[in-house]
Amino acid sequence: MNKIRNVEMLKIMFTFLFCLLALSGIAMAATDTVTINVNISISSAIEVEPATATFNLVTPGIDTWPDSLGFTITNVGSTNFTTMYASVNTYSTEIVNPLVDGVSTQYRAGGFVVLMNQTMLDASSSNWRFVGRQEWNLTSKPAAFVPDTDTQSYGYFGNNSKQYFWDLQNGTNTSEYVDSTSPHIYYCNESGAEIRIKLYPINGSSSSYDLSGGVTTYSSPSSQNGWGIFNPASTGPLSGYCVAANWNCTHIFIYQWDQDSPFDQCSGEWYLWNNGDFTPTDQWWFNMTVWVPKGIPAGDTSSSLLTITAS
Image 1: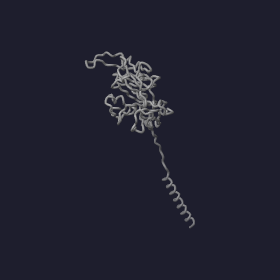
Image 2: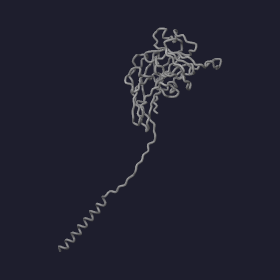
Image 3: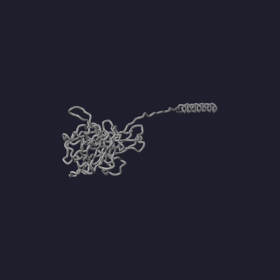
């Protein structure tokens, strides 16, 4: 009987072990691998925040200016940039002399915008620079001003609290006949054209309108797409600025940050970024405020677009 019982016990044990082996075989994991490859396409994209800048109730011609607004540029694309610059569409949208009617909406807001690069260490006025300030020919001649023979236009350059008198003289192409009502075209973007601006601001004396001396002179422009591009001077109220004169002598364009054609022909433009690779997720900063010169009528101006270009 004991032998039979032992045999039965062995059968039970073998059966139990077999079941354990079978169960352990079901629980074993099987593995394999998949190779993942991802190729990123080239995407050139930046984001500028905030998307709107509003300056309310700005008093013209004051020594101080509104608090500045800070902006962040983020590389949200997949490629590196090496330079970034700013431009405004003032010159292409403010195409009628706003001095004629004295209506605020004929002025474009971009003409008052000044920027400061984050690399600049202080907020002195010399570090704030116009993106694109357009100055127009006066509608009447100041009593103290005596124009030269070649003078075609004259006006004021205003930064914030000061105004400086300038004139624009035509180039060599001055005798082309058009018709009996408009006998000549005056080319202020050609060889021989000059811009003169007084070294000191309007101060109530006739000498501040005397452009025969005490001036900075811009000469020898490069003719580009209807503009005469003058390289910056080292003295005067426009020191360091690039200046462009429209071919028809009606206005000048004063700029620092604009690298768009044809204004990229000037040697004095500045960059918002020019420090090597600006890689994806990198950020950079700039500040903006406005300088509203004296003589700007009250009310809303027409809005402008500030464009940040990375390349």
